Amino acid sequence: MVPDIGHVLERYATLRNEADAAFAGVRSRHPDCVRCHEGCSDCCHALFDLSLVEAIALNRAFADAFGHGPERSDVLTRAAETDRQLTRIKREMFRAERDGEPPEAIMERAARIKVRCPLLDGNDRCLLYADRPVTCRVYGVPTAIAGRGHVCGLSAFTKGTPYPTVHMDKLNARLEELSRDIARTVESRFTELAEVYVPVSMALLTTYDEAYLGIGPAGRTD
Image (cartoon, rainbow, N blue to C red):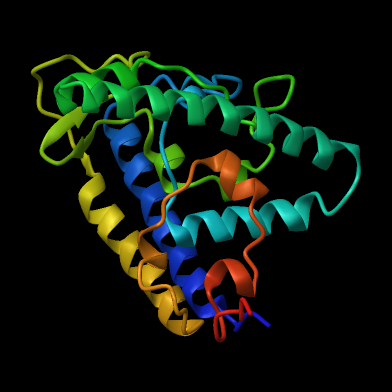
């Protein structure tokens, strides 16, 4: 049985609220620059991975919203196809790095790749919008990762002009700590469990049970 991690997920919910507040703060100061609107799905085609706490939270939200039925099956079918596509892309990037392509060039190329999120419905609306990850919540306003600025290409922020910025390194550090708290709470035997990152597609497809989380002694092979 998986131990209760509700206290960790509550802290994650608080962090999501803070991300929402940061987005709203930038939007209130620069409403003409933020072009996010219902039906826009530009950020829903970006490549990014989820920390353990976000993956589990999204997985549980999906199970609560789509416990069974054709809509759940449709999402999982899309997730499986998306995951196969992402596997091919990551394999190509690995080969490029092995062949000597600079990491910066690989990352810039990855940023231009568009892969549709399996949670998008036929009207380009997120099926789990209220439970979307932190990255989705701040997309559309200026962000900084490892000292480098990023902004949605559809926004109207002017390059070279200073704007309030959401620092993703700080948010990611807190997500990492929450993931470590999950590993400690379940007493996982996997020392690197908290360092596992997966795309949305794999978060939906995974069963976060005792076996995945490394709860209890390892199974015998004899």
